Image 1 (cartoon, rainbow, N blue to C red):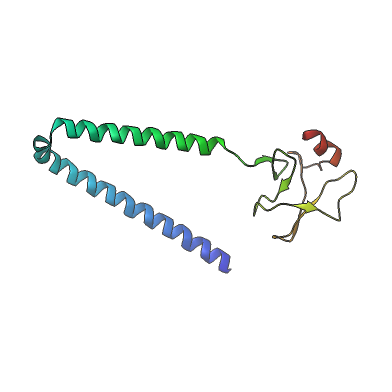
Image 2: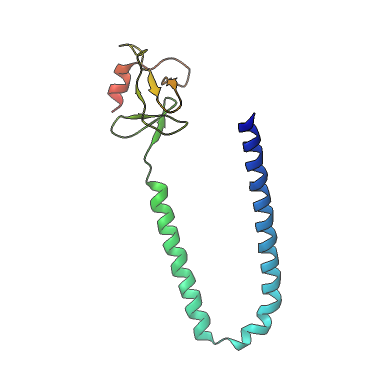
Length: 139
């Protein structure tokens, strides 16, 4: 029950932060629209151009960083588990390395998550069990 209350509280805080941010942006836009016609004739064109170029370069840099981090994926999702390219399986809930389970056999692959204390089993989309042979062919 405590987890549900924490989740609800977190969602309420997210909504409040979003609402306050929206109000702040609206107020800043309204103030800027009223102040800029007065301030604009007082600012030199060279200063405005330098501020524009600096803003443009920072936005391009932010875009490059965002693309770099978006493309750099540590895990990929397959059979209901997270995997690395080297064939290690990770828990989808806590992202910790999974260990081979004692329940594993030659035909059925099962993994143990030491953090969640649960057995994780890779499954095909239709719900059938994935064999160890099929997993070994995947990597």
